[in-house]
Length: 173
Image (cartoon, rainbow, N blue to C red; front, side, top):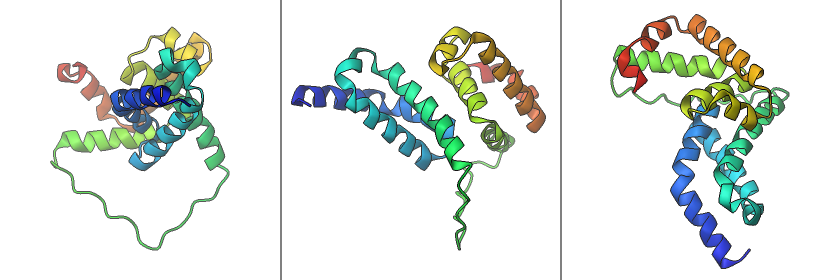
């Protein structure tokens, strides 16, 4: 690649890297996995940079969603690796009910299948329409709607206070 191309790519990563990392974190639920997922997506994008430079972000987001779903499928065939010492949990900044609810919601999101998690991330974190979400995931609009409906129903079942939280005005900022 040329020095100009490298500079364009570096500028793009500096400007949009944080937003892409937030998406990767929402998909993985783990900072280290999110960083790995994003790094792999950026490596794939770099190889195609001359062709995608004008429309790189949607391309990279699609890589993130597809790699996360594919990675989940591969990991389900590998056994877990036991460790001798469990990592220490970080102390909560505040021990309030909001923090507990956020942690419950995060854990519940991680229990969803990757496709449902991807649909919720695209629809509600990325604020994409049903049609845009379907285009990113390469499926029909009806599939997006049914997956979102199933995912939200499962979240309501796993986190009963979720319904109360969703009805509060400060949540819809």
